[in-house]
Length: 291
Image (cartoon, rainbow, N blue to C red; front, side, top):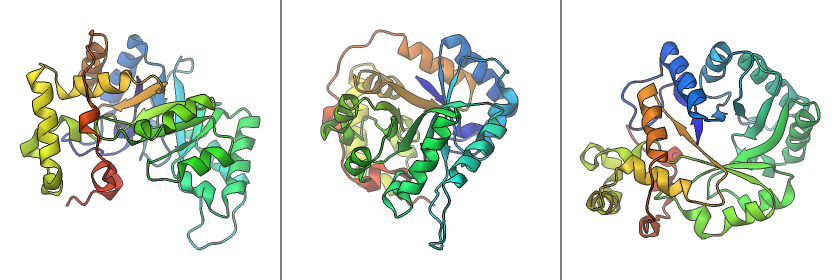
C-alpha cells in the first residue's frame, strides 16, 4: 500500500467531511506510514499545496519512494511547446518537495502523448530520467483512454490506473496482464472510488440513484459475510497479482492505522467479479455531476 497525499493539499473526495488535512495531522500520518513500512508516497503538482507540505514535513533522509505528476502540458491555444518545459516543471516539483529526485514522474493527462506535442513531451520526460531527476516515467490513465496505443508507442515504465470493486475494466480486458508482460509497473488508484465504496447508500448524492441497485447489492453481499466496505475494497485490490502497489489517501492518522490493520488480517477469497460495472459516468469521478 502506498500513501496518497492529495488531501494534504486540498479538500478532496466525495466522502471527505473534514476538508484539507491539517499540517500537524499530515505529520502524524507520515510518521504512521513510516512505522508501518509504507514505502510509496503519491503526490502531484496539481494537488494544491501537497508537494509543499511534503517538502516541509519529510526529513532530509527518508525511505519513501515519491511519485509525482505533471499537470496537463498541451498548450491551450495550440502554440509552441518546448521539451525543456517538462524539465522546468520537474525542477519546480523537486524544489517544492525539497528532493533531488523522485521515484516516478507521471503525466496527469496520458492522452497528451497522443497529441502533436506527444513526441516532444516524451523527449522532456526522458531527459528528466537521464538527468537523474526520476527513476521511472509513467502516465496516469483511465480505462477509456487510448491505453493500448500509449504503451505500444512510448517507453513507459509505470502506469497509474483506477482499479476497484466496481471498476474492474482493466482486469477483464487483459490490459494489466499485458503491462506486466511488458515489464510496466502497475500502481492502482481510486481503490475506494473517492470514498463512494465506503458511504452508506442513504448518504449518496442523487446523481448515483441509477446505480443504487448495484451499490446495495454489494453492501448486502459483504454485510452477510461480516466484511466492512473498506476491508472488501482493500482485499480486492491487494489480491490482484498484476498490481505492484495501490495508493490510498487518508485525512487522519487513525484512518491510516485502520487500513494497515485491515491489510494485516487474514482474508478469504470472495467473488467480487459480479459487481464489475462499465459505465464511465459511474466509474470516472471526473464525469460526476454533483452540485
